Image (cartoon, rainbow, N blue to C red):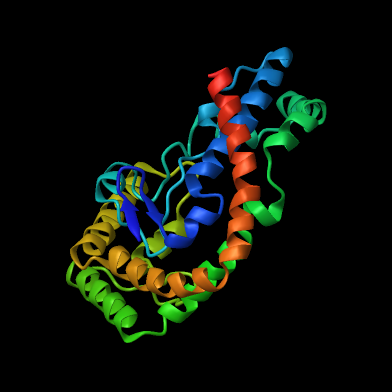
Length: 252
């Protein structure tokens, strides 16, 4: 398992067989280039690069210290101008609907069916390996070390094992009460403070690295057992990725 710190991505062995987070971003960007080009006909000038937040993996909580010191729990580009327009109705929404219809065939060329977009057999292996890994003593020890670290820094480990397993109770409570679209200055500052503590502890005890390595060790035999299916999945998925990348190269 590798950590791409610059892009805040966790790369597992099984990820080479499915549409990755970066691949997905390329596909979504290609779709938006088609859509924003069409939207210009209706007088709307949107930047396709601002349509979606930047992809980021937080499987085991926040871990990119540099990023959370600047953005807290928010994703890069989460509050971009194009995102705000996605929520608007009226003329923009009508134009968007028209473009989805007129550009349907071009969009379908670069849009994988749901089973491929969601990872297919690779996603099943990811889930199975996660379930197996989470039962090990090493997994529980790593989580305990993180709990102790954030506790020493004044935070409380999340009480809800399903909703706040990889966050502090303080961050869970903050996200429940704060306006996520337009947080107050104090809430934004508090989010950065809490996220920084969580990420620093994640790095200090090597939580994401340790848990990722444990999960990866369970993926390897599952990959060998399902090599043929995964190879076919990769072949089908890569066709859409290649089309999207070729389109972006020609248009940007």
